[in-house]
Image 1 (cartoon, one colour):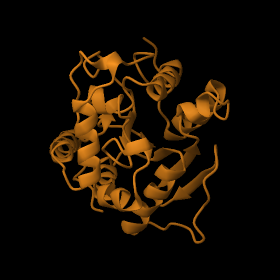
Image 2 (cartoon, rainbow, N blue to C red; image 1 turned 90 degrees about the vertical axis):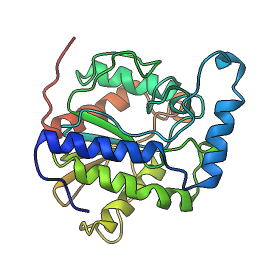
Image 3 (cartoon, rainbow, N blue to C red; image 1 turned 45 degrees about the vertical axis):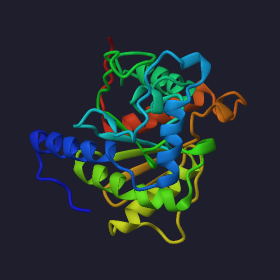
Length: 242
């Protein structure tokens, strides 16, 4: 995993090239069929809206110090809006916390063109297409892994990674190991709020802000804000308001 030459111009150009490749990807037949079928056979509440129906690139600050890695787009969230964590309950939970901590300019996001911006933070997913039942296969995870590896390499300013959930944790560790990073043996287990240093980065773990976790109280807003604030502070991002 080789990073681009340092500098914001080179970083932005490399991200643009990667994003163009991601949105055209058709490597996983099951995911292609599912994402396009969902976009074609819309649910009633979104029947009048256009659907993105393609893979999702990362979103956020190209000079980020903190990278957040999620699972995959939601069928009627990112797969509809064209932006990760946008237009669904998980995104509502995430954006509210980012805004509360001075890392985003909006507390919610329903559309990709709503003016949302992030400060010092970028968000990506382990798998870039919406999967059936929110469950990608291991093969699909591994097929998509090069995109995450390249994005991480381009983001040479990132010193902290916040990984959301067990699936993303496993995927991210495999990306690091594949890049020759010194992943400990045995591999660190997933645990909410746990931290580990691997190479030059600190990796922080959190439960995923899925409805399965937030509706049951397994992950509360206070819990998530605390782990996000910890990641922000380790990364040295200055909170801003407004």
